[in-house]
Amino acid sequence: MDTRTNDLPNIVMIVADDHGREAVGCYGNPVVSTPNIDRLAQGGVRFDNAFCTSASCGASRSVILTGLHNHTNRTFGLIHEPHNFSTADHIQTLPALMRQAGYRTGRMGKKHYRPESLFPFDFDPPEWGTDDDLIRGRDDVWLAGRCEEFVNGDDPYFLYWCSHDPHRSWTREDHPLKPDAFGNPDDSFPDDVEQRFDPDDVIVPPWLSDLPEVRAEIAEYYQSIARLDRGVGRLLELVEAGANGRPTIVLYLSDNGGAFPVAKTTLYDPGMRLPLIVRDSRRDGGAVCDALVTWADLAPTVLDLAGAPDLGANMFGDSLVPHLEDPAAPGRDHVFASHSFHQVTNYYPMRVVRTHRWKFIFNIAWKLDFPTASDLHMSATWQSTVRESSGLGDRDVEDYLHRPRFELYDLEADPNELVNVAEDPANAEQVAEFVTLVQNFQLATNDPWFHKWIYE
Image (cartoon, rainbow, N blue to C red; front, side):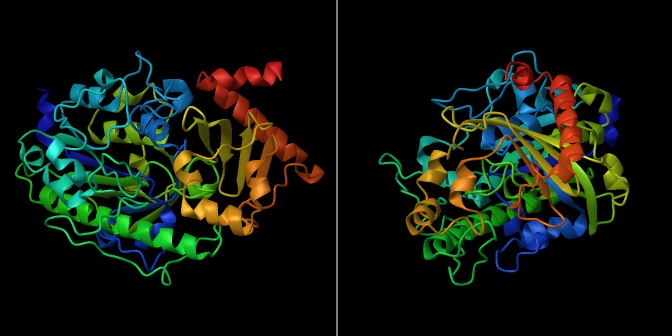
């Protein structure tokens, strides 16, 4: 093994499933219970302008694990049946590269990648445990405990720990738990106690309407997040008690925004502006970084922290280590996002440029209705919104479903992205500049959808 391993830190990447930043204590929510995630922020750097690049689970995770946009690594959408998207065979992934860097690699919880041969984790237990443990897939304290032996090995490790919370769940006849909307058990799991929330106390974000059904689902969402946070706390206990004595770096993030309209599957900010916290035990904490960063930066960052920055040289993102060293350091002028599919039936490709002030969205298939993912369509939030004709906050449902080719939002004046100013003649030069940026981004990332500029 490389002699550099004597000095290498342990690295833990925690990825939540559909956890929006509107439901994290350290990002300003006083109701939801996230003391362990908040503790990470107190000891680390909290990024205030962090963005996934595709607001769909499988596609977003492909970016996290490759440093390449989904249209580059070819994981265009969800990987499981019947959608079956997968990473291209020639792509190098983070677990494979971390092996080259001298690390033991481990994965726990949600996989959501394929083909598995491209993701060679050394520690790779069954995603949901054994058949007898099926109902415990939502038990994050248990999920953390399964990592105890791995985090006590001598060599430096990279652990990719992925909760299934707070993703919406499905009630299946063959599922013994029959979970509610966010996988809420009727009773607490062994060694854990459920924390429930009063719908009257939750905070309804501005992109949703204040309906009883919405409040009830947000209360379940908070309950699932609290369960996740307890799992994070247990994992941190095990990591901090680890036997190898190395410094430890912990990253906390979510794959995309919460499973509500205007968030998950969209590239409005509720879908893509997410929590990102990085705690390095070698550095002082409590800082906030305002730089624009994306999930394409995560793999290069991990490799840089592992002492192997050259292994990330062909990735699209950049290492965030300079921002960990100096959170006030200036960052980029803009970042990009790219969404192609969610489910195979949810075709709605978008390319986005985001600056501190502006959001520009190119809706490539703008003549189509915006497709609603099945879990969102069946939710009480969506069904009550449609039934009551209440709109989505101040956004008309028809405007949500039928979008123009270009959307441009002045986020300083319009943080909820309600007033599209792309057609304003005063913004023609701004739109042209963003179109050029998008086209150059598509060419640089081998985007199959670039030909739409030519043929349409």
